[in-house]
Length: 374
Image (spheres, rainbow, N blue to C red):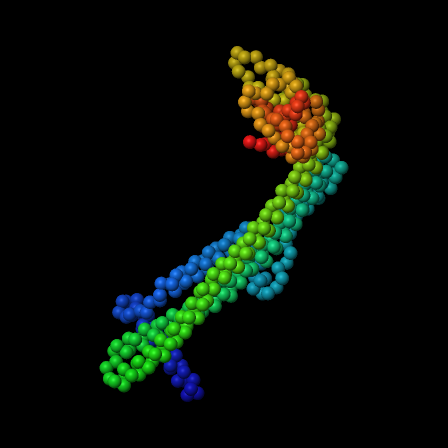
């Protein structure tokens, strides 16, 4: 009992001494032991690392999971040391809706077939997104959290201890200056030696931890490379999935055209195309030259015949064909993947189409099937 009382009294005395020293330093009434410039630089570097790591961690979490409610839920599961339940991605949910709509409209109809194809691609995109989020969480977010919740907490604790040792040291220096009697000076000098030793020891411990920030940077650099690799693989997968889908939809173009023709008679050459037909990529639109007052518009009055079109004096470009394209009629040019053709545009042409030339062959080609070269 007496021991506990004495310890409490000693602790209270130490706390009061530190508080007095800190207050007098703030008021400019007491001297303060300054750390060397290298140590101060280590402290500043550590603080900067902690602050930027927090910001990068939080924003990466937002990137991977934009829904704040879902982020809070995942945080609670992690704190409770429980497995986060699997969550359907937006792409997978869209795929489900498209598939159900296709079954409702009829999976054998052109619209139903397309919904099924697009829905399947959305499902694959959603699965790729899930894999990317999982990989980024393990290889990037987890190391950042481990630093903030592990190494940084240790550094912060040792810095607080160093601050207390420094206050004790400066308080002893102040008492030594105020001591008058020989016995009081001797006791103050002995206490000063002890506090100086403790301060030096704690400063060395803290310095070693702060120098370890360099190893933290190396570790985070490796994790950053892994994050970029995961992100690159994810976007490459998405790009390939969309290319495959575009090819599949291109093969459906004949079905769409046939459907449109069977439901209504073809419009006259001088009539504007139907609204529904104009939005379909495989239905060729007739380029029309804007009418100029006093000048007859011969192109607008007849169907464009690409074989009669002459390339402009300037403005032709080379293009590489991305994948095969089957011409829908005689006005279009069939394409083979990886071949090189010359392309150019005419006044009034649909921006989704160009005139393509390959030797003596000439016809309209869709822009989405080309890679335009400088």
